Length: 277
Image 1 (cartoon, helix red, strand yellow):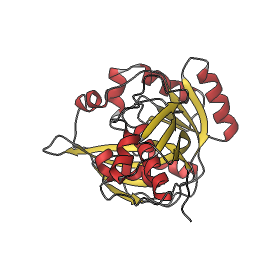
Image 2 (cartoon, helix red, strand yellow):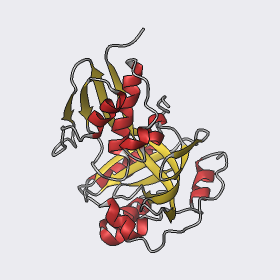
Image 3 (cartoon, helix red, strand yellow):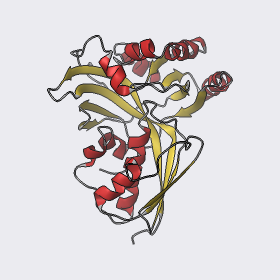
Image 4 (tube, helix red, strand yellow):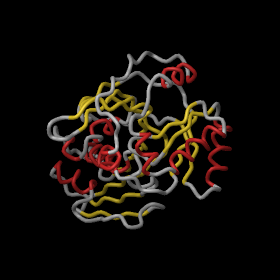
């Protein structure tokens, strides 16, 4: 029986590793990235009506609820009319896929309401296909090649955003090189220690240019390391960074202290996969 209203979770997307491997003639960069999703994110509620969008939540200020919003564009792509409520818990334009995750959650919710998933979800953004499942994956090309991976080990994470907006085009423009090697083969990780050891062989190629543009990102990474992160790295094009900690208590203590600096900081873990696509 088809549901009449649904609530969907839109988890934060993390690039545990992100290599820039080339650039196409049309200007799009080629990437190779290990993706996972954190158990902290936005929420989408869908009900009959609309099309309309209401936005609330701690990061709702200044967001445009007009037709260019990705949530409404996602609904339009399916041909569905729906009243959408977005509760914005993630910082905006912060390298953790917020807009793409929201669009993917709208698509998942509409599928539950009986509207088939469109084949061209990449039109909404390169991250939307991987956000549909919100499960560990290797993402390559410009984001359209998504290879599902086995579940990752349990990770206790701290996400930190210093409240500085970083322009993605500006970060890509500041890259020193665009033809870096791809990721090494991705094994099945026995535990978090094995995952961290593998991640140390990788990079986020956007981290160095982002730190030059917004030096506070480097301060966030230093602070995560100071608090005992087994690995600290920027996600996407920034400015959100993550740290992997040894246990939930250590993650919570670090997040509490970092939040006192006026930064957005949350302790979390990996999300359960969302099903679609």
